[in-house]
Image 1: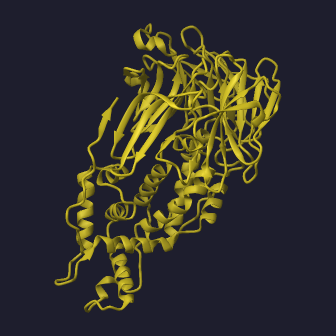
Image 2: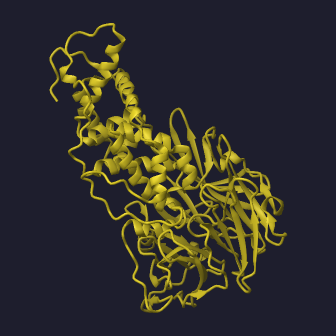
Length: 421
Length: 170
């Protein structure tokens, strides 16, 4: 663009003011949100779109399965329910040694684009099997693990954002190869799931459910996997109950197989403050408020408020088996100079205060991240992500998982598998 | 935080950003709608990052840059090149000048425009802009430099502060 001779120069402030004027073109939030919930992309002239996804459920039902539909991948139904594609023997990991002896030998990772899951060895990345959703389901949407490192429970759905959700158990043999999926004696769930958590001994499954869109009534249900018996607790008033950290749903129960960590996010005029609570699943069903005790972590550190301080726990923490520690990604932001802090921090369950920072990264940009996926009983070994790398974090060291394992979970800086250990 | 909560808290700001980025209500609506449908489907991942709005903002920029509506240009009444004569105290002149600047902004290549919006509307550093666009900070600076030259923006002195050095520690 030619510059006219003698034309007066403009200032950066004038540019900022001009850009502010463009805010007048902002579309209606209601219209956009309604279209998003309906799953209907607006047809624009000259704009080629992929086929719109017809959603019967709120979009936040089954993120992984939904992702599969967005990229247009449909899993063909198989004639045999719960087919396990076994891989050749001899690919089991070498005997774990050193730091790898402190973590589970095997993990399951949901592969969003395919609706399937892979079973792999932590120490080598060797793929030991592929799990396909049993018909009529086409996608495995969530997975949770026990603490024996060999038993997992899957939630599976018949289609993207469709119900009902059914539950299946998977057991690995001594060499980590998967057996067949077994249907659990739990009635299919028609409400939208917000989380899944399996007790350490595999006897109980906790399922948190979202309220129907626009209504209150979030609940948590705990099933006996031996009998299918169900207990249900509800949060009074508006709020969302969630269980299970990250994609894995590991480390949400204490070792007593009775105490369950839940997160409640409530709605206020100032945002969505959160609470972490310990639910006594032996208490009478009914009110979650009555059956649980609050962990004294400040609500602004958990939820999302307009007045948030510059620090926040990301997602739902892990709880150690002895019930003394929470392990969480903890994010800091300082204003001037702008510094982003990404940490892996342990909090005392009793006081709610940080007791140890296992890792800290400070950066000038917001693109960093930390995540936690599994913790041992005492909190001294954590499977964590630092940036885009999985590894074993101890108070003193970080040991990256081998490259083949990384490739199953992360590609080009994007998480492609949701693991459960 | 659920997608619902994110949308309720951040959607107005997201829509304003998209409007400034695209300069067009219809295109902004298209871009945000497309991005939110994808974000909604992947919320289990996006909702777990420290600042989901930054992730969504990056998706919006990428969607804008990848949009096939290449023929789109913002058209405002009174192109900048048509405005002649010395500035006057008339307060409307400032408004007209901004409109003229926006008209010239609408003629910039999309990547340059994105850099300008990220820098002067969002207030990002070149390091952060580079991460949004997937390029080096030097490339982002180059886009900004060419865009500002095209818009006849005189940089303030002293020069813009450089981002602080990334520091990693236990």
